[in-house]
Each structure stands twice: as C-alpha cells, then as structure tokens.
Length: 82
Image 1 (cartoon, one colour):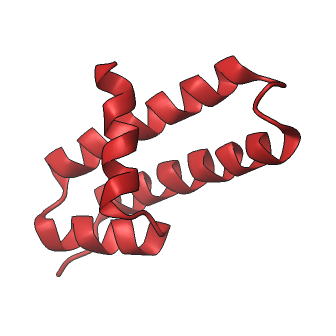
Image 2 (cartoon, rainbow, N blue to C red):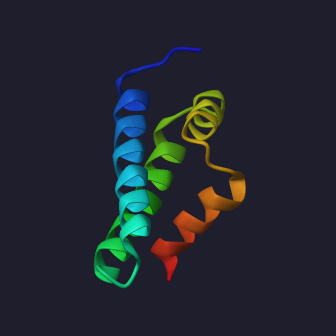
C-alpha cells in the first residue's frame, strides 16, 4: 500500500474539520449553527473526494485513523445530498 500526497492531504482536511466540529460541540450548537452545517458539508465533500481518489485499502486506513464508522461516513456524505 502506498500512502501518497492525496491521502495525507485528505487526512489533514478531515482532521482539521473534525477538530473544528468538536470545538463547536463544546461551545454548543446554538452558538454558530451555520458554522456546523458548513463544516459537516465540507466533511461530506471530503468523503466523496476520498472515495474518488483513494483505493479501497487507503480508504479503509483513512476511516480507521480518523475514527469514523461506516455509518458516520455515510451520514457526512448525506449532508451533501440534502
């Protein structure tokens, strides 16, 4: 398995967005609801990009390293199709 720039870039994007979402949760959703929506949509877009540019093995590693279950992954993707 080759880890490449695409993997590293996506991992960084996901990590930053997931961390930002955690900070919003700690402050309370009501504070900046639009920020939460934008972050969740961005994560959803990253999910689609990851599926397009990573092979199956890399995608599995990315999900595992981010701590995202298949259900969470699909929930973020659903934010885009709403």
